[in-house]
Amino acid sequence: MTNFISMKKVLYIILTSIFLFSCVSQKKMNTEKNILILKDSYCKPPENYNYEQLKISYNSDSIINSNTDLKNYFSDQSVLILNALDATSEVDNMIKIKNDTTINSRLRILELKNIINNKITMISTELNAVAAEYDCEGERVDQMANYVQNINDKKNNFLVMSSIITGAATSIAGGIIKNNDWQNTVGIGGGILGAGLGLATFNPKGKKIEFEHERNLLRDIWNEKLETPNFPPFVWYMFTEKKFANNEHGFSILQNTKQRWLKLNFNDDLNEANSSVVFSNGGKYTASDLRNRAIMLNQMQSVVRTIFQNINYLLLDLDKLVLKK
Image 1 (cartoon, one colour):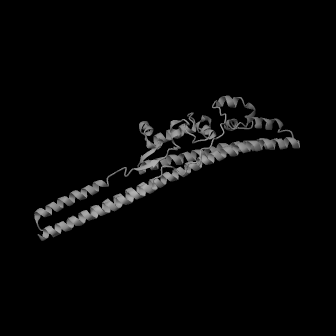
Image 2 (cartoon, rainbow, N blue to C red):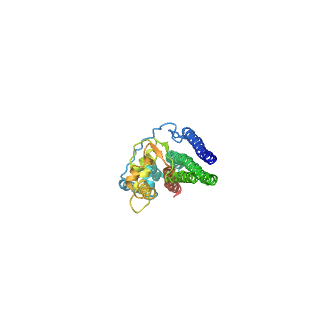
Image 3 (tube, one colour):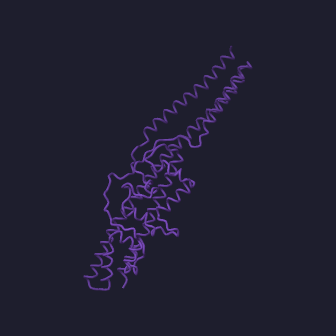
């Protein structure tokens, strides 16, 4: 009878401890989930801005050939940017009067240059806005990934601790109980419980969490089609015009980025990529999926930043035009 009572106490302690830990942990997880999961991103612009609809032509060769007078002063990429900004007429006028040293001509050149600079400032602001949103959204996703990973780590730590407690309690019970039948029962039960706790830690993907992003800054890139007002026309032009990519394969910046994603983020599995939650309005994410999304957002931020190199080259060419005799 004593052995039976001792065994019951041991089993009661084991099961009660596991149950209490599990309830507290689950309650905490549910509370934090309800607090932290936001359906609307705090990174998106406060309102949809109607960007000026630039008359951008994608017939780049025709544009360059029709502006041969600019090629003595500007690179092909700079000519395309000037055309996209509707600033080629200002540059033509600057070239026509640049050798006139009168005060009126010099003032007119500075006036024309100021008009172009204002247009460049506007597109630079647009580029900065897009880069900032990518940066903010990447940080937002990273925070959620860390949150999910912490849940997984805490869960695994709890299960490992419970498994250790179960093993220790089973050993103690085996020493206390003298009845062989009860010893076997406790040993088998403890072994099964410990094995179950161990298997529970074997979850490669871990917990999933609901994460929404109706304004998806990656979807248009993947679909190679501007289906939303996520990007200003000039930024999209820089993404998709092949002459800005600086590569030997004839791909645009957008196409190069998509190829990198397919190879490095989806292991060349096009079906997996097309069905990925990353390019949807949101859904169930694992920590790994969130990390994947954060990496892609950060890559796009870098892509936007590189476009400023083209802008800087244009400004240098413009300065040379003004100063060159």
